Length: 325
Image 1: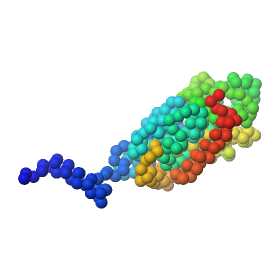
Image 2 (image 1 turned 135 degrees about the horizontal axis):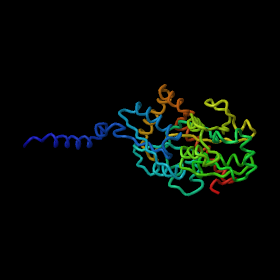
Image 3 (image 1 turned 90 degrees about the vertical axis):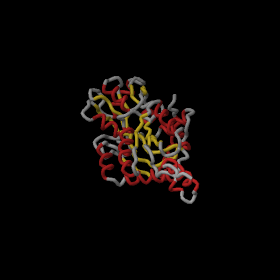
Image 4 (image 1 turned 60 degrees about the vertical axis):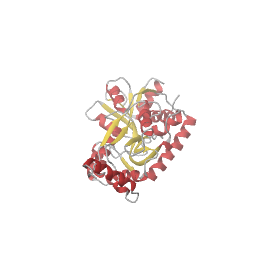
């Protein structure tokens, strides 16, 4: 009998290996065996994109031989990217940045390809309060000026948002409800294009999360009027909150990581471990601070609990002030 050539020998070893159930480690490559795609449901340059790229760079150093490719899939207030994530193969090679309120508000307002149950959540990374900003040439200098202008011209003060049901849109509706005013929301595909519209004086004001607004304001004719947090932000202690002005308006966005439902438990564990190690990594922490990302790390179970709490709150808001109307 002639000896097997090297290719036949290698093939035979693979067959024999995968027949030996007692030695499964010889039959499968360690995770990750090829690049991981990280879907961002918003355009490049916005706060979500910055969060994704910052954590991706760190996670590559915590996962053996990993390469994480950020894929921006903007549109429909995040629905396009979230749909792509929910429909991806649950093998750990497609994960995504998941934002509130969109991941919750979109399924409340209309039929979507996903609900919270469509995802395996990994960890929360950032909690960024909402803001409203104006062009530096605007006569609006304060929260009080904004409210007065809106009352003087009901429905005429335009405000850029990231689309119907987005964090900015819901925050604007919350402000309307709290202050008894009527604004005119203008949807964009994300905070970055809305910021261009504000700087071009196409809109009177725009919603943006604080980290985004600080970045957009850097060296630009941009004025942040107020922050929608329960206290003044560490990154901008001189900017008042709406609470300071007497209006109970809390808005903004949590940004975390998730994959499609059904990922292997060991893959979720690997990804969770990498994120946990990043939140103790000084390079990652410094980069997040430099890009004005207010970190709020929540491990998997706490993250899921927070998402369920937001789900309850938004369902209650929907019964009072539906944001699709």
